[in-house]
Length: 419
Image (cartoon, rainbow, N blue to C red; front, side):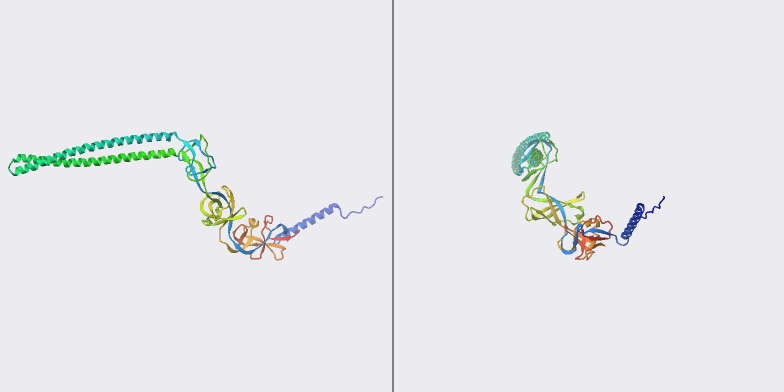
């Protein structure tokens, strides 16, 4: 006998269908809710950082890294090229001024020295021969001058005697004129001899002067060659520590090639790298501070290198006052470089929010602390390691979220909840 089977009202297919429709409705409702008006996001209040905007002392500063260097470094370059024959000291040795470091050999220089010495010797010999010849010539001229003087005196005596006799009618005119002509001849001859002697003297002096100049020039060239040979022994130019010595026995070094350096141990400076963004704001006299062995020390900019490499330029800073005990060349210091004087300003603590906002907006916490809403058109100015300076958009006492906004997307409002 057939029996009537009652149809089920809630089948599994029907339940799944209703569930799907309900989910879609809820999803659409949530989408409408979040896209209508301000978008919201629930945030765990314990996972964010809330800071207060307040007034306080502010000094703009930037963190920079510096390397400790000797106050003065003198580079050792090869004044003359050559082969390394001897090393008298090793890298790191403390040197005294004039102490030899290494010796080079250069056969071309050695040969040039021998040739120069020979040339100077030959010039000296020639100059001595020329001087002797000039002296003998002068003696000859002086002897001739003596003969002329004697002949003039004799002619003068005869002339005067004949003149007297002629006036007394004791001799004839012919004899008197002969004695007069002889006297005038000897007188002219003396004048000519004097002029010749004078010119000879001038010529001799010029010759001697030129010979001396030539000799002195060759002697200076010889001295220079000797100095070049002497420079093959590289010596410490000042007291200090020898560093970066890069030579080996038998190695050839070219003229001008870097051999090493001498670090003057009288003090230290710090070479600092600064981002090129600040190049217009860096000048000599700016100060920075750093901590070493739990004690604070001060540095001051003394020199600026304006050449920019890889987006950075360098400055040299020197210690102001006390120098840390135990500081060593090559150490890296973390320095806080002040870019302004201390002043009162409205401040917001630094945080990760700046990476997403660039300082143009921020989430401000409501008075009841339950929500935080986006505030646009704020303006942040200078900064240091702890704070940003607030120029507009916030007031003292405002509480803002300063932790990272990486997960907030385009949210306009955050709902702060505690788990």
